[in-house]
Image (cartoon, rainbow, N blue to C red; front, side):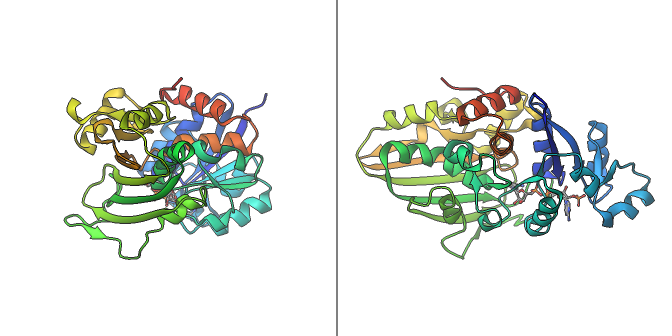
Length: 340
Ligand SMILES: NC(=O)c1ccc[n+]([C@@H]2O[C@H](COP(=O)([O-])OP(=O)(O)OC[C@H]3O[C@@H](n4cnc5c(N)ncnc54)[C@H](OP(=O)(O)O)[C@@H]3O)[C@@H](O)[C@H]2O)c1
């Protein structure tokens, strides 16, 4: 079968990872990536063998800098089946119109509103809802993290209420513009957008979220309290997490005490860009008391959504009917352990 032809619009934190992940699959290929600026990331993309396309407005800058490009973004549309849009949030509406006019499919990221596409995507929770769709949206890094664990807990125990506090990284490691560099900043608009974003996929879930921005770049951390419809045990919940796709259990008593230790672990594993695609749950921090479940989870914001984008391409382009088949295939290619 012919490979699905993929264009990646925006080669930043998420886009460069999606391009690499798509390249690792045997049923899809990267035709090109886009950049607006001829900076070092453009040169790195070219060095990695990606064809770089540019918006019309950037042609002059590329010509002036003497950086070779393969064509304009409109040339790219003519060569692909699907665009994965990894531009900064708020460009979505403009690009959706362009993709529609060009007759190509489009995947957007969590920086866009659910209303842009009307369908949001998570491999664990609703793979089939994007089946054959022209547009879908892979939810944000935090929402992906919450869905990976809460969906399975809800399936087993029916959550009455979930209360989540998100300790957010202030900026990505390569970002020197954002902060705070020293301080903790509460998100005062409550509840934060994270709960409603989870509800774009699990509309029935009562979830309440708060968030605090912290002076770290490595990962987000969630503290979760879920009130379940029946009593259970810590061991039963751990068994669910042990079998959960793209969830990794770690133990504080093994020395994994902080998000810095998790990033060191990712480097030791030898993943591309030292990424931790799995949601990391502290096994010795999971506790059930009666019908209340408490746990902590770490989210590597730069990478957890990356395998989800690959699965979303498979669902939209009808490459694998069952979520579990796509997840297994993506995981194998990206060296993420499969379970069961
Ligand atoms: N970073 C995260 O932690 C994270 C996690 C999950 C989801 N997301 C979501 O993923 C999306 C991308 O975020 P990101 O962090 O990857 O952003 P980013 O690192 O700032 O990268 C954005 C990319 O888009 C390009 N771009 C800017 N304006 C453009 C335009 N008008 N047309 C085409 N390309 C343009 C930039 O290229 P130039 O540099 O050449 O201008 C850059 O390569 C957002 O929706 C975000 O909310 C981010």
